[in-house]
Length: 244
Image 1 (cartoon, rainbow, N blue to C red):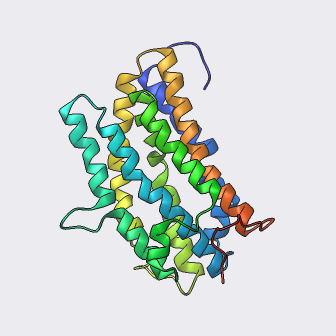
Image 2 (image 1 turned 135 degrees about the vertical axis):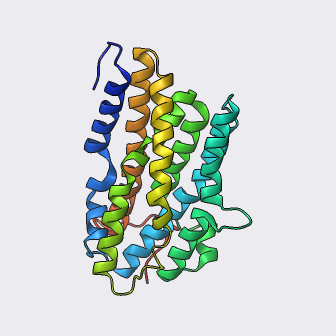
């Protein structure tokens, strides 16, 4: 929704949800192949390997945003995201669970952790996201996380499809996703409320929608890179992971 007029907070929410409906990566051909059981083990490994870099950098971008929040209550809220991904003394966290997923599909955890085999497209897209959150206004940085509004749908589709279509993938392999079904909605409720409260001008509201479009592009670009390298035309970048 491109407009010069000031929208109501509910209009902002509706426009954000429309961005997700049009641009979220649940529509990407690679995701459809993944949950439809159409990928080989090596292609699934490539997905797990490259996605690890995104997972590992989420707490990095969250830490940069946390340092900029002036309100203590907001910092407490955002700090929980870092714990969710990094874990603490009593929990492994999302990054560790993703590393376990990669190991369970047949990858060496140390190789995954090194990120030596990821595609340039993956690195560029994820690094661009980290820089965006670090450099843009707070309301834009928070708005870029609003893809979490749509993540329960893609998680449910991905988990059910992979369990149904790959006999070498089991529930413990996909343990990363179960906590996200509650964490992501909790996070998105707060972020949406923050954006609706702090986007007070038409310019800020359009910046919010632009931030969400950018984040959708980041997620889409990662799958573009995977599809180009491992599906069609199958041109793997020099130095990147080559399935056995």
